Length: 403
Image (cartoon, rainbow, N blue to C red; front, top):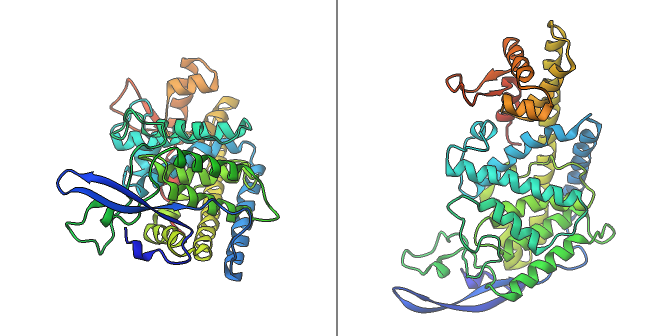
């Protein structure tokens, strides 16, 4: 880490650390420990306040649309799966979106796919926690991290615990080939120990307080996200957990009532700027540029998510019209259309379980909707674990573009 980049405006302290390299022996360097977040908003420019206001308006539009839907939860899973794919891509885990949306969650085809599906399970746990009105705790974060890495390359005996070792993040472009990792690193977060755990708890306590008169919720979400990523409390998964906490925080603050927001695609498309803005807060206290960047991302993400939500609702209406124009009249056929929009892929057994019908009835309904072109098999060769999908819904999810 370039220690000279931390100027008088740095929002933390450089703390000495040391270790032993197996080849070059003992080394000494410094890590960055951020100061606790303030109870008031940092000074922001008019341009940034405008970006924050635009983000608030876009989030209100998204939430208002969700509230008007007969069943907003119906669209939670496909948007969450899209978020999982994109946030994992930011961390170097790539699985095609179509594969994520149509995966057999019980039998993922690769470890990369398992990592992405773990994100969905982690998010489900976090959203349930918020819905139950429970406070954010270090224990919850540990549980989320353990879910995220289970049955992946990153799982180990310390999974679910605040890290016990020093970590480094990235590599500076100007670093020399023979520099020690800690010297070549782009950023070195705080050392492990009880102080790190206490600072994580302080952050969670800060996030639990609503200060609408002192800090706009969008600004608060930006500040909390910076603090979490800078503390970097786990040995793996900090980026994905941190971006999930953006949505969790907005839910806790009442800005969102339904977690349909997907933030990672926008940040993924601008990852270099994203990392630069985070670092800029640490090195020079540049809250203004970072908050403006963050708010712009939330606005674009909210608008894109709302557009996708409306497109899925439109597909849902078109498919139900196809049912009405057929000889099918059962309410269960319309329920299956809803199910297919909310579940990008599924088995007949899943329809039997979730719609509460017999296997024969579920199998017959699926077959009838296949004959109408509403559904299609994913793999016609696998008769034992046949999976089906709605091609029209899948096209909406896979075809979404970046703002």
